[in-house]
Image (cartoon, rainbow, N blue to C red):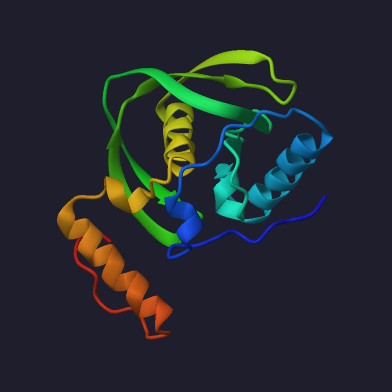
Length: 172
């Protein structure tokens, strides 16, 4: 199994919506296996295909119960509210308290194209929301308030220029 390079903030592919998967074959299964390897190597809890440069609507995750793959995911219902410190493999080393729905119902397909429905709350629900955001071209930075976003962008600019990290404000 091969490990991909994870795309980081600034890569234009992270801002584009991915295309639905229409072919369920061995190449899709290999993609999922390689994404799982990449996710574990990072290490991370979830990984969307566009984070490794693949413009397909697929993500993998593992919240402690073994790896799973979801194809063509869609959040069909959500409720409640939960704040949790959230980070992203495409924005490495930075974390923020993010408010998201506490429970979600996800519809998608498995690697054979069979329709699946999964309910997720707290961490599992958050992983679903985070990865679906990726597949829709939405980065975690867009979930921040204006001050947090400014601080995050300042930190990312500093890193891009190779400068030492300076003060970034109380949220970081």
